[in-house]
Image 1 (cartoon, rainbow, N blue to C red):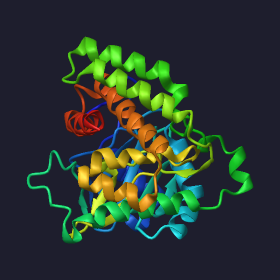
Image 2: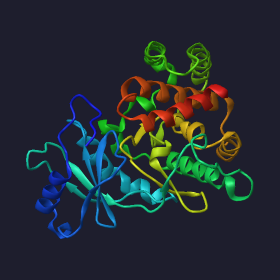
Image 3: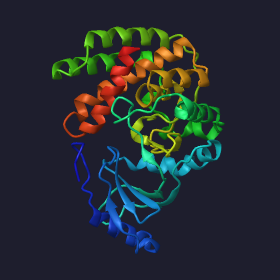
Length: 311
């Protein structure tokens, strides 16, 4: 498989077959097929018709799968869109050092940013359904109860739940790297937009809630009508400032869709400007790291960055 990290664990279909057969022999007759587009955190393999195998690509990555097994059932019960079910949680074995998981397979087609889609659907009629569905998901996950025991779970703390202003140094470092790489972005304009977002983030009232943390097109499925069919990969599930989930508006929706999403979610100016800053940050940290190994992801993040810069 394509490698994305210097400390990548060796994973292939043969290893997956052996792990599955050893730990969960009821799946022995289910064919193992590597997905053509795998994730950067987990290698993904189709298991028969109804399941997916996820193996962390890096040492320590199994923590996210253990977290999902513990908390995703509570999230699934509180949201109206389909999310994966952890069917089995495998232990390290056969020389593979991390926990791994078998999850349910969700139907639907992978969403592309409007700027990259062959023929973007207009917002008229049911075209605004995706925007409303995304707003509903964000509102629902934010409204979920945060149990007291979650406070002691270190896996539920992530930098994407911090106030944006605390990440100023990280953004400026990424901007410098993007400038050196010759990235096709107006870096000076990006720094201006970022400065406004940092100031806005200081005005956002801090309310710690659940958030998805990686609400990007690669983790969204749509149905034949263009509505939201499923949300994938809760490895970034955490508790903190949920403003980061607004990035979905800048990558998954066009200008009209963003207007509908913001209206449906009742986002004020400070939070909206902060979400725009998150979109720039997540895009610009992608290019230096994944510029060679994940061109499709970089194209999607470039679409998000350009939308954020356009305002």
